[in-house]
Image (cartoon, rainbow, N blue to C red; front, side, top):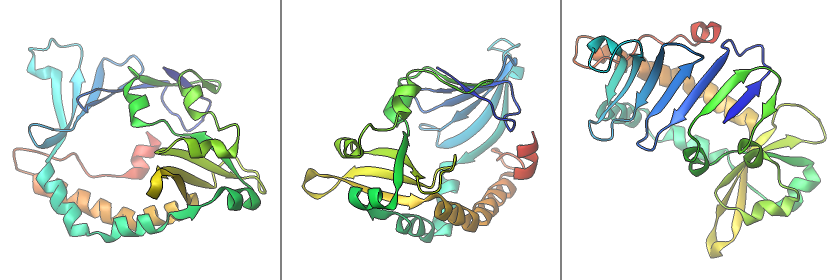
Length: 236
């Protein structure tokens, strides 16, 4: 499946991402001779990111280069140190939502986000530079509902919300549906601005945890990437 974006911030010509059934994620830029693999470590207990140089045969040790590795126990220890407040604050951002209030408020239902099951049925997603385009089956997934009531027929779905009183290309909020008591589909929503404030608050905590994992891995059998610099990554 190919998706096109006419976005000046998209520095690469194309990017292909594959989601494998065993949990691995493979990414490849254009026609490069190498690709990146994120391994969840179901059996080994070690999450690792490695680069594969396709110019070398599979038996050649130069074919694989480990870019970062960390044990799941170390990740769990860092999450335990952060504590539950991160999740509690995130969950508290989501408010109950009713169709009547949403209509009176002037919120329009936009694209539906693809589910894990839908993504698992796709061999690969390729993002390319060029005129905006939306190919199947993505076009069917993100198509907004024809009527507001249609969202109550699908549980475990997520949609973008737009402020129709103040038209903007950016989403105003996000909405999820779930099956509540009695089997009825209910809704909750959150403002995108609130999510951004939450992310801004907790980003330094995650960066500090990342740096600790990196420092702990120095000199050990497993190494955990290099220092993160979001500005440098954005420029690339």
